Length: 96
Image 1 (tube, rainbow, N blue to C red):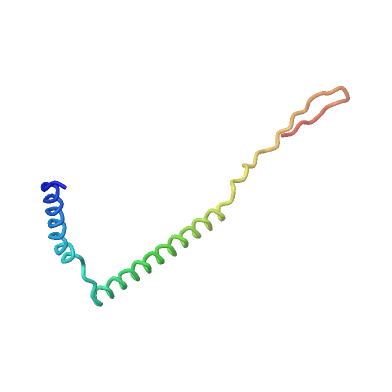
Image 2 (cartoon, helix red, strand yellow):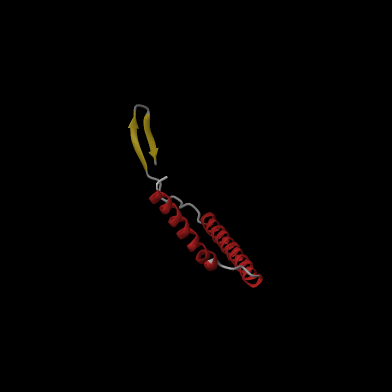
């Protein structure tokens, strides 16, 4: 390998290891208090989601109940109209 290539590999390795401590230092440290807080937060989120789901299901049941209560509209009462037409044997009534 050429000297320039070796120097490039060496310098990139040095830069890579120089940035590692910063990344490790900036990583969040989970102590027991933080862990407990995260667990409680997750439990709270689960309870909120369960409550929202129950409220949604109750709302849907209410809407379905309303839909069942609405009776189909009945046909309006119309007076029966009859027509009398003459036929060969007399008269025929046609009522609608």
